[in-house]
Length: 244
Image (cartoon, rainbow, N blue to C red):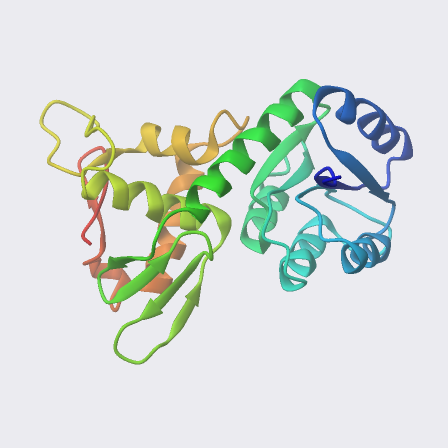
């Protein structure tokens, strides 16, 4: 008999954790594993790698972003949703940089959590089936969230959102998705900011174009020879274009 997917629930709020653990299997065919500390979460991962994780922003022994980073270091490549407090933009950004797939503002509806987990898992499954592609001087592996330089083999690790941005911009540049563009005068392969936000972050509350611009800036620091004069990920009126 095939085991059900395992979802790790790591949060110091016992009532919240137990409520999600009781209700989540009723809405989706999953098993849940609870952890009240970062150490318990890592111990659970060492026994069984979860398909996805829901992580609180503050645990007794480490913060949420720290646990996200430890989960990724332990080899977890499934979706990780970080639960944040309303207005904690710094914590949300730190979580995304540490490897969280998305942030979810608490309190939240269980149905919203389930929908986001499903959407993230579907996107991950799609990227798993995609072959590596060429972007500038790199080979880009969407599933591995990895860029490898063709000349010297240098590897560039990407966050979940950075990989999703490159993946979508590459598909737009190569005509794999309809070229809607930010306006009637947009050139081929140009993706508007709002479209990119919607594709990468979905309907995450509190995510603005500033969040996108911050990720674009950090991506350029990783992939451009001269980030101030981008030659791979360029800005166009109303949006961005990837030059593959």
